[in-house]
Length: 307
Figure 1 (cartoon, rainbow, N blue to C red):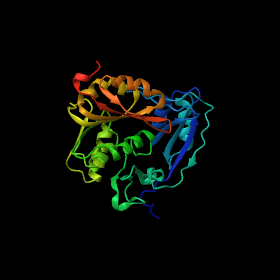
Figure 2 (cartoon, rainbow, N blue to C red):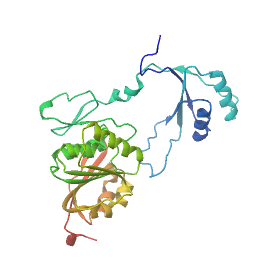
Figure 3 (cartoon, rainbow, N blue to C red):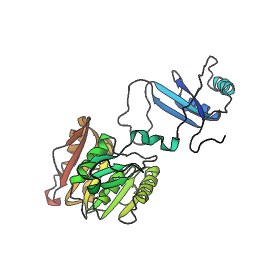
């Protein structure tokens, strides 16, 4: 019988990397035929803010290696023992439950409302209420960050739902999946300039724009490209360190009277980021959710800057 479409049989093993270099083990797994290798926290030490350009890991790492189910497990075990110099290495292979993998990411992603009108929906799942008034963003995050499920993105989406977005020119710094840019256009923005340092984010933003039939009003560009200026709104859902570094540039890009929404911050990072922006912006009361915070500010006239 032919295999069902989208259902692929695999086997896998789990290994706690005690005294083993993750890069070495990962390379060894791929050399023995692994089709995927995943590293995860084996304890309870989440990484909340990696430095830009780094791939930090946890003190204790759990590795999962995925193989096609026709793999000779005895051969893989022998090869890994030799390559890792661990003659006592024991691997317990187990069949992976059959799933339609290309839809697996949807299991925790469902239609979500932000504010009064704005809905973020996976393909094929319409809003569950108030559909007549709903402004819908259809989203597949792909390999990029941003579905609305994280508190930082939710804070920005809720703010957008009530912000002066209609006919606005907007800069989206760190666009991720394009979720904020597309939401702003759906809410009536005239143009959004979306930037990101990650090429996968630029691809995801283009794909999600096409999924929402957005053909005009969106510019997607790498972060090193010119930003432009005189924006009505600047959105930046990134991290505390780059937000601090980019404060003068974000100020330059924001027109007098324009708004900023800054997120990607833990509540204990609010003061230091606020300090970086008060020379140019009048900051408003912050919005918080689940230990994360969103900062909103209004650009002062240049002759009122405190720099």
